Length: 244
Image (cartoon, rainbow, N blue to C red; front, side, top):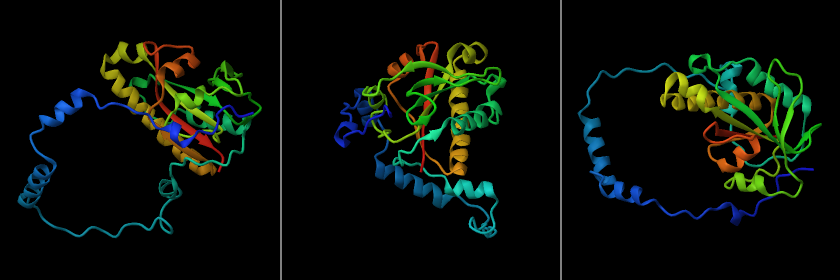
């Protein structure tokens, strides 16, 4: 049975106070919005350059390659059918993205580790999984989520994920990226997660599924499920995937 429950729309809103440092920085701003717009218009008018005519753009519908059509068809979705995906489909997804290593990674470290919060996948009980690497054969369940547990709702407060098949969680390994690049390594980790997210978007669109990229979540809960800590391996990006 699915473990991500339908969320009341009023429960999806968090009340947060605006930080004082943000208020102070706005007060110290040199320009008001109107002054900034006026300054930009003056700069634009003073800029000079040769004008030339651009060639006619391709028609995505008739002239573009299949890849460009995928670009135009890619959309974020927050409504899913609730139908399950098969274990074969999940493994096809995982191997296509991560076994091929078809995305750039700083220093060839590939420091982003994928985890799956499984909700509606035939052949797997609901829970948090680490799927096999090219040198492994079996998935490992890190955390079993009871049927009526609401912790998944709490981990992703702003999105209703009750009808998704699974959520891909991308976690960055701290020591691997900072030992070589220092603090700059975190910048590379975020870039790598973004590259993976783009590949996921295109693959999901090609398969006719739906997805939504999620930039935030409750890191403490996610780390508990992944059996790690923020100091060791931090969740940096999540992508919900479900059937159309």
